[in-house]
Length: 149
Figure 1: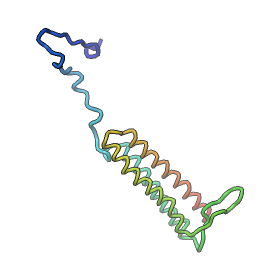
Figure 2 (figure 1 turned 90 degrees about the horizontal axis):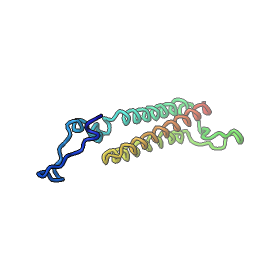
Figure 3 (figure 1 turned 45 degrees about the horizontal axis):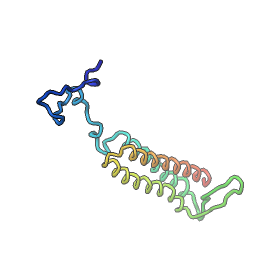
Figure 4 (figure 1 turned 90 degrees about the vertical axis):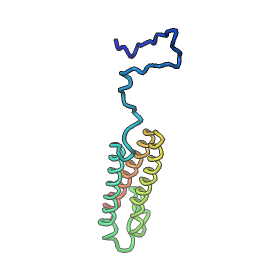
């Protein structure tokens, strides 16, 4: 059996309860809280990079397919039952990836604060939510590009 799992300290007459000996096997285990910085974490970098890439592609798609070919108004919403129900100016299509970018930047700031106080899971959940928001913006941008081209 492992001696450090079932190690019981024998108390001598000369020892006090405050005297503790550090087990050499347990002292070799690194502290899980000490590690990489916020942007040094692989999961943080990959979530931010994926979100930023999708948002940049959304901006490019809006410029190439929506704004460039638009004259005065574009379709902003299409419903299967009612058809086109919202039209607007071409610059309004930029609000979709713009809001996704704002959401990403705010969540990076909040996640950084959570990461600093060792709430790693909360920071990762916020960044994953930013990825889902960026994916949603990408789908909406693709739909707008398809409808308006």
